[in-house]
Image 1: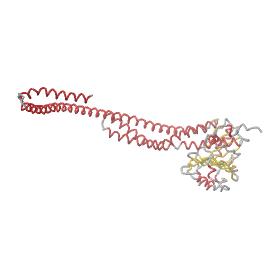
Image 2 (image 1 turned 45 degrees about the horizontal axis):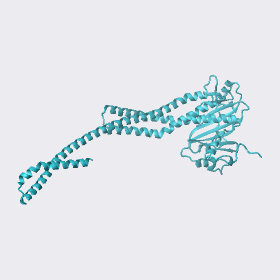
Image 3 (image 1 turned 180 degrees about the horizontal axis):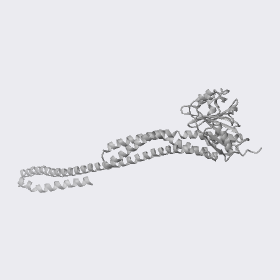
Image 4 (image 1 turned 90 degrees about the vertical axis):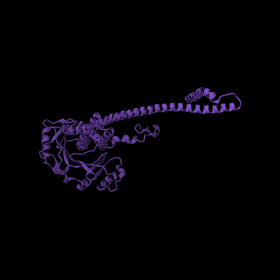
Length: 441
């Protein structure tokens, strides 16, 4: 039997990196669903902050026939459960968890109906949806059905009737393989609705890809917008911080306050800016990341406009772009303010350094003057010391001369001693010079 070229034996390769299997399988982590038309897809996305996988597993165990579900089965962040007459897909992301329910479309919701009611036809107990752990961030009822779309305007008229005559946005997807219609309105039930019309014979995989792109588009749109309230809430604080920084800079220029007062004011402003940065930087970065995903999903739809109707991508970008621009501007404003505070701090540091250098120079001047005085005093003391030492030496010589006179030498002690005084002074001075020379050496 020949060896399998796709699955090499363990001995044919070096040992695997610890992350190889995980990274390789990431591309298969969230496969698209296969949806048989007509179908009703119900999406509920909840924020999972404070909600563990054990909590979500316990809730999934409440489904019929899922009593033995274990948390280990949720370790890959993706799980598809096939229940009686429906399919439930569970996906956990970094900030939210999505539950997608796919079931056959009820008869009363077919194309031609007007504003059909859908929740009562769910194959799943409504209380199970209501008690999903977490806080709802997105909820969508997506109806997917088959109908001829060769005349887009006729199909759009039926879709608008299905939405109860309300204004809708619509576009042809994939350059014409299906039509997506929505109005981005939040219904009293808490859901928004989307309608996809595909021609007869549409494959289950294509229907699954279309549903995934549309639902992810809406989730990522709402997650991207979570940075907007934060940006608006930060605006007053940023204005106050900018005004306070301008005041500190003006006082720094005018030299009105002391360095200690300016430093205290600057630290107060910097602390507020750094606190805001630490609290909200992740939210602003996440907003930009989600916005990039929204743009990517819009591009993947490959929309073709229907004359007289705004496309989904145009509608979303026109409404979403100002919000994202506000978040980006606030993030840039926060970063710029932090940099300006750093520059002001550097200026204040320079001023403090100059003041410190001036004080050091004054101190050195005082020390130099003190040393000069000390040297002068030392010279004076040395002169007195020479005189004192000479006095004692002369006194000793006087006693010595008196002793010699008593021994019989014809000497006058006072005259002899007086004659020796210059020699004594010179000798003591030279001895002091030699001591200084030795110390200096």
